Structures are given as structure tokens and as C-alpha cells.
Length: 432
Image 1 (cartoon, rainbow, N blue to C red):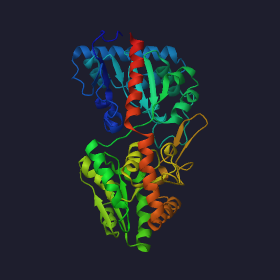
Image 2: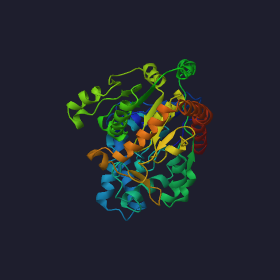
Image 3: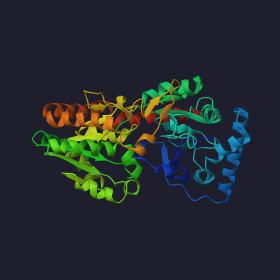
Image 4: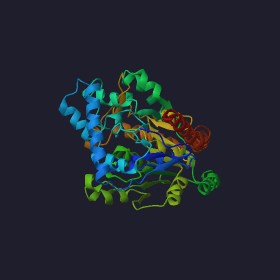
């Protein structure tokens, strides 16, 4: 496909509001932060409704994808190829065709038909194989050299895939080995994640740091995902938080816990809400908050809790940037942002039990143990970490200051946006 005429902006279709991405919640703050206004580029998030001609082009594109994959991955059966091609979603491809962009930008999964040049940003490598492999279901399944592995490999090696990026160093290091492909490795670059509060919020955050130096007691904060999915309360360690805090508050009644979450009453039963609210000094916030009010929760907290099964980059970095001391888990990838004992605490008990990498760099993960019961051993480790920071004010404040400084020194917004811009410029040069 030809590039945009010289002098016209390059039109980039960010697919995150197409139907195929809605099961992931649509556009995510991490991705939209990349779409800062940039001379020479026009970013398209809202696609026009497709007409019959756009739909016909999408059907032809998926037919072409099927033929391309059949030639590139002859070991895959016709049924496997058909299922894979169907998972790219005709309606989403039709919306892209209606937008008629110069470059397509999905994230995490290669949900494209290879008709147009495309780029992608990835976090863990596991979602590349969606929907056939997914978080929490990969512990006993190896993707290596399966039909889906061959099909994804063919897509990433295809000339239409112009560049890949990840903010995770280990994903960049592993991707060539996972796919046994120097060509894919050569397309992939590391762009460190960047975060910044809006200027007015940043000024408020900076001014609020001294308040933590004079407060008495210790306030803990636990938040669910931005989309407040009930299962996320469990997968982010909410049950272990309640178990640990319930023990702690009996010993230290000056502790407090803020839960910014929808409680999982559909999973745990209607009495769960009353049980949680009966725990001393627990405040539940389950309604919508604007961003300023959301940041205020971080500023009220002395310690942010993220004892999750997996990495949640934005929550982790945002909490550190707010100046809260962070207690996370030792889930894979956390160590790229939090240095245990220096900029926070990584509670042991997730790595190797719920999440780990195999020898190919594929993330093995299971959520089944947490669906059956909370992890008592992990809760005990979490309690020890929480009690240590509740008791040792000096250490808590030292971790708070270290995390605050670490984000501003290593995860500034400028390099994140500029790195993405350099990738776009390199791709644009190749489209000429």
C-alpha cells in the first residue's frame, strides 16, 4: 500500500475502539498516552461506520490473510487457519477499511489482516497468541511450535509488520528466542514506559508529599482495575489484602485500609459486602471517581498495595509517582520497575507458583488456586511486609521518597513519547 502523499499527515489507525478490542476494555491509558499531538501524523481512534465497499475490502483482506498463512505455515490445518483468521474479526477490519489509514496500530495482539503496514506495542508476549492462549490459562500449555505459534510467527515476520515495541526489557530480549526468529527480534525495540501527572495534578502531588511526614498511623490503599471488573479484585490480591489487614488492624488499631474497588459479591456472595465493611477502619469506595479524586486517594495513602498475580505497569508506576510506598508482589516483570528493598517491597509467593517464564520466554500462568481459596502463605508474607512499614515509619518514608524519585528519573513521559515518535519516523521513512 502506498504511503500518504508527501506533505500530508500520515494517518495512523489506533484500533483500540474497534469491536475486537472491547473485550479488553477498549483504549487504555498506557496506549493513549503515546498519541500526543505530533507534526506529520494524524491519529485515528474513532473509526467511521463501514459501508458495503469497506466491508467487501475487509472480507478480501481476511481471505488474503488466510492464503498468506496457508503458504507460510503449512503445518496448520485448514480449520486452525480458519479459526485464527476469524479471530481477527471482520467487523473490526471493516472499520479500519472505512478509515482508510496509511498505518494500522493495534496493541498487544496482531489483530490485523496484513493488507496495510502495521506496528504494535506489546507488554507480555502471551497476549500475542490471543484468544487461543490467555492470562491464567497457560500454566500447563506450551505454545512453542504449536499451530498458533506458527501463525503468529508468520504475521510478525510478514513485511507488513514494520516495527514492534515493548516497555518490558524482558519481552524485547525474549521475543526472538520465543519465535526462533532473528527477523522478529530485529523489528522489536525497547521503549521505557513513561508516566506523568497533568501539570496541575503534579503540582498538587508535589505539595502533598510533606503531609506524609507528619501523619500518624498508617493508611493502606488497594485499588481494582480501572474498569472495576469483579474478578480483578481477586487476581490483584484483594483476598490476601483483607486477610493480612484483618490481622494487622487487631495488633495496630491506628492502621486504615482504603479499598477503591467494586467488591466481588457475584463471586463471593451478597454477604461479602457486609463482611468487608465490618472490618475496623476499612473505607470502601466503589463508585466512579474523576482523575483528581482518584489521585487524592494515592495522596491519602502511606502505602499502596498491589500483591497481584501479574504485572500492572500503570498502577505500579502511578503509585510510586504519587509518593506512596509500594508493596507489590514478585510477579514476573515487577522487578523492571520496583527494586525490592530500595524503591518498594516485592512480596514473595507469586513467582513460580502462579506465574513464571518457561525456557522459551513464554509466560506460564494459572489463576485456578485463587479461584478456590486465598493463598494463606502469601497472605502471611504480605502481612509481614505491611506490619514492617506500619511499624517502621522511617523505612516507609525512605521507600516513599525513593519510589517518587525513581519514577521521575527513569520513567519520564518525554522518552516514552519520543521513543514512539522515533519508531513512527523510522516506519514512515520505510513507506516512502
